[in-house]
Length: 387
Image 1 (tube, rainbow, N blue to C red):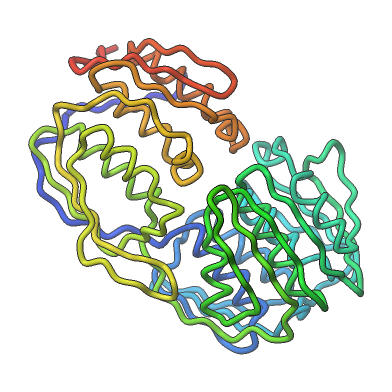
Image 2: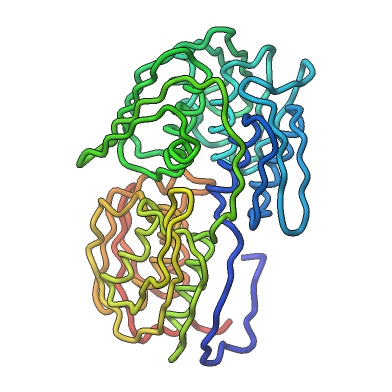
């Protein structure tokens, strides 16, 4: 490996309180919906990551006025179908699949051709899973093998559709929901369970949405909307970012950590449920609700006696972004941990399942992997060898 990180001094025992930047999924969705609202929307604690900054840059190219400061972001929306841009527009989604796929939903009404591009990694990812349902609204897409770059030409008369989402992808579901706002009529979505931040936003904004939660899927009905009201939001902390510090605490010696105001949406807390199954001392306190999202302080302590598990597959979608660090806990657990039905991990910006196994092997942990599963042979006495 060419790039090495050398840790000269291990962590001492700690008892800390942390505040983490805003949730990425919510930051991107807030910005997209604010861009189509009428009036000024303001968010505090917006995540200033590359993906979110690329979202704001794309919206600026679409004619949206945005003011970004250290503490807040203001977006001045002009309503649905209000994007203004010159012919030959190129939008760069960078590395963000969330941005690239969701933004296409709002572009089904675009008046001239728009080219969507991304970085090398994003350009390898599948966009047919989004363009196929969006074509049913009447938009036209030109793409090679379903990969970026994509050319989109919208329709003046987008029509509502029926859509069956089978991958458990919140991005696909959300893109269709955003497109449905441009129609006259009702779009019906039968979706495998996945993150529901977009549904929460729709419900809080009092958009015309009905959600029926079944055992294995959600039935979502969205009617077209003429206006979206502005949304002021104190964005809660990101559980995916928090997860790194949670795992660090678990693997440290006699340490405690409190992370304040974290988004604990039930569709995102698979990692907390999985860690509890592995005998981790983790709890939620000061639980409250804001704009439909649950928020809490997360308390976690170190744990020596970690248990191997056969991870319940129904938790996969709610922990999809955290599995690589969950694997680190399994590496220190007593016994063999088994994780199945994880093919979707390889549809991220890198083949995460494949790389997760490689990293564990470099650490001296035995694994057995298939295209959609991994067995991890834990070693509670594991010590990383010095190079």
